[in-house]
Image 1 (tube, rainbow, N blue to C red):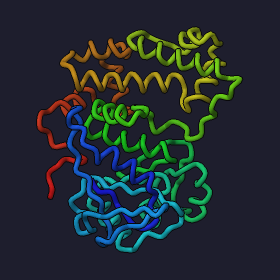
Image 2 (image 1 turned 30 degrees about the horizontal axis):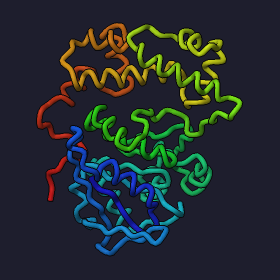
Image 3 (image 1 turned 90 degrees about the horizontal axis):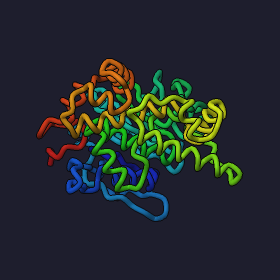
Image 4 (image 1 turned 180 degrees about the horizontal axis):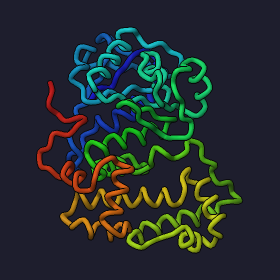
Length: 326
């Protein structure tokens, strides 16, 4: 794991990356990650608020990284040093996964890695990003997206979502959930959710409480064939009103949210149990193994059986952060 550093990076994003991959949680069955702070030279890297970060590796180490994460910037037009940009280009050519949080997308765009590709940044920076990098296709309505093994994320909390998603992809839903619990944050928000969510006003508190109650109900009844009408009835709303309020509060539709929860529940059962596929499909509300397989292929680009094989092998060589390099 490489945390790529240079003057101007945001201390918050550095903290997020360090909290996710730099904290030992092996006592909670989370893999031992190997996070390195990489810079163009060994000099301390200045950050806002009189903070500094001391690198422990230089760019020469970067070819050893399985994943490179680029923090956002305090000044979003801060030019990255050319050696850093060149190292990013070489890493992408090698096939290394690269992720940028928030304004870190500006750094990847400076390197030319996003030209002709889809990317995202904070909703308030979209116009600035488009003005300075017109060759990039900006997707404003997402939390994080991937294109050509390059991940970009939206604002502050979306950076946490992306980091947890990368852990989930490499080490499974249980590891990501354990980290999320430790950080006291939501364990599963999909990248397709909207960035900007209209938060409830005091007049809407009752509706917000009703929606929270419905989500709890749905999680307890995933094995049932729930519909929007069923959930609306639980909330005491019409289906149309319920769908509108739900999307406004969560940034996603009820059915998409429900499908995401079914997939997450199936992932946990695949990782932790030896239950047959039909049983898992039934317990998570897919109804049949065929339906579950179709949704896994659509959302995760894999099958339930392949997912189980990937995340239940003892001593497997995972993609990101394994401790194997000095």
